[in-house]
Structure formats: C-alpha cells, structure tokens
Length: 175
Image (cartoon, rainbow, N blue to C red; front, side, top):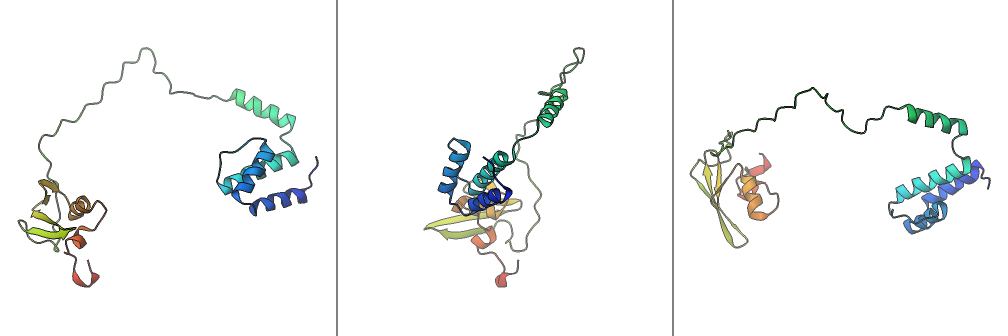
C-alpha cells in the first residue's frame, strides 16, 4: 500500500478531530491489538507514529546493522562496580545518639501574639478550644506545638492559618 505525503498528512489531521473511543478503535486497526490507553494526546502520537512508519518505512538495512554494531560495542553496566577483593569492608555509619529530652527550638516572637501564659479560646463546632501560649510554642490538649497553624490544623483537620483561626490577625488585612 503506497501512501503519499498528502494522504499521510490528511490521516494525521483526521486524528486530531477524533474522540477517544474513535482513537481507540483506530489504534486497534493500526496496531492490530487493543490499547489500555485513554489519553487522547498519547493515542494521537502513537497512531501518527505508526502511520508514518508504515508509509515511509523503517531504517535501511545498513542503518540497522550499524545500530546493532554500536549496541554490541557499548559498555553497559548493569550494576554498581564491585570493590576489589583486597579492599576492606566499609565501616558502618555511626548512628546519632537517641534524644530523650525534647529539643527546644528557637522561636522568634510575633507581635500579634499575647504574652506567654495567656490562654487563647475559640469555640469550634460546639467545642471550646483552649490553647496556652508558651515562651517556645503553644500547648493544646496536653501537647506542645511550634505554631498556631499546627494547632488549628489538628483542631480542624485542614490547613488553616493559626492567626486567622484564633482571630489574632491585624485589622485591615495587614500582617
């Protein structure tokens, strides 16, 4: 079957106007097998490639032989190189010591926050949320959190700005 460049161009242009079910049927015609693909762009590209290879042919015998020669000469490494037999085994990496004391991280004080010791309250879904402001965090429900946002996330289950949740944001939208 000979196909001109114009016919090939028309066939490929027709692919762009097809729906996914139509492309799946065309794929089955061209490749003589069903496709698991449902992505329209992928189907168009695969079918267009196949139509071009059928119309224009494959590589010449000379090109195929040369590709085979190059593949045979290639130094392919299928795994990492082995260490020499006389090389000593690598020393195990030292493990960091276990921390038993909680680490206090430095925290820059935000002027929107009340002083340490203040208890922030918020009614959320019929439940009173009480958070104590600490010098280096916030205590809620017996646990210490680094930020109000972390507390708000635990309370709501979604990402919420902690200052907005506890109504500590400045008036007028300025932060």
